[in-house]
Length: 230
Image (tube, rainbow, N blue to C red; front, side, top):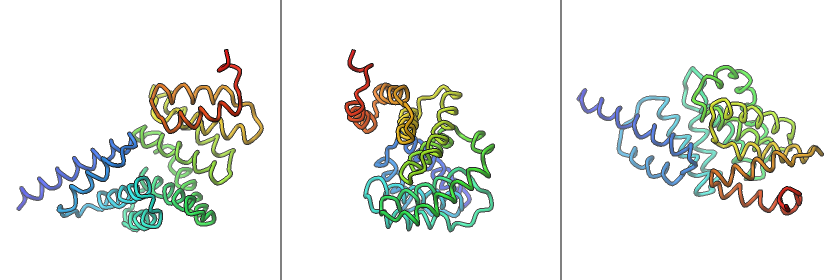
């Protein structure tokens, strides 16, 4: 019996580690496939249960666009009683807010946005010490969420924090998205954002992030930057 339990624990840990890696690459289909492997395994560890609920919600959010089901799963993750707050507690609040944004439920989105802000404020040092992928994911998503809720100043602040970490780690992870958010926030505030748009455009091409690249391509046509006309 002990051997069976140890083998199950090892398998669960391995699958969840793979799911996290897929999350960093925005490979939500791979996340769904890996979650299916956990269906027949008995899971008792609360941290693992919380993560499974979160990633189930993420699949509903990103693949199915079923925001009600995503919110249900995110709330199940929140309700797992664990004393210590980690990076995924912040991401759960962020994605719950984003799901409400997509449902056009701004008031509800702001509730979870505020919760995420409070958790970030209380965990600044911890965020800096965590896996930089998780830290950058938090700041990149908070910047995007801030833009969606009309908080341009915070969008710029969060993007700048994420960019700082990425540059410190010499990583391109989500760097194009954060420069894009920084540029958009600046434009909305009437600031000249040409340099940040250019950085986002070039980085999205290098990273091969087609979603950001096409969006910026259209934006650049609208703004008509001189640098692209030479």
